[in-house]
Image (cartoon, rainbow, N blue to C red; front, side, top):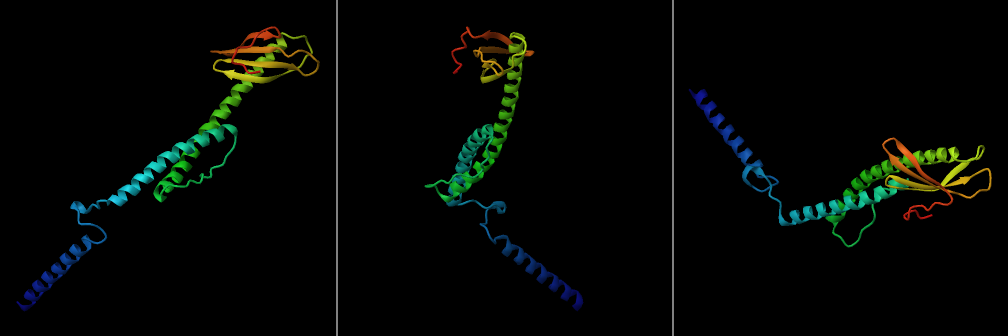
Length: 194
């Protein structure tokens, strides 16, 4: 009987110790909110808000710069230095700028590649058209090509004889670039700058 009583007392003491340990550790490191959830202070909310605003603005600025440099074939992912903003805003800005720059640069490089391909297509179509309408043996290159929507204009320059450089006007259709006009006596569209 003494043994049974001793075991019961020992078990009760162990349960009390365990319960007090659980209660003591439940409040460590945080407030005693319902469900153990930490409610952020006003200072923490303000810091998070500043970080999010900085991140959004940085992402926007970085994307814009990335697209520009991607189109130009440049790559400079260094975050610009800002002054006059708090630390949380700057931290968010730097993170957002880096993300936005990478995304924008990829988009700009993709656009540049597509533009280069389209420019090569237009140039090849122009040279074919000019050769079909020129005297045999003349060689040409196309300069000052400008593409605007589904129209393109360039100047055909003869590379093996001294001749006038006629305008070449092309239009893009379902089957690719096709000739519209060619000659020295034609007027290019008013949007053509050369």
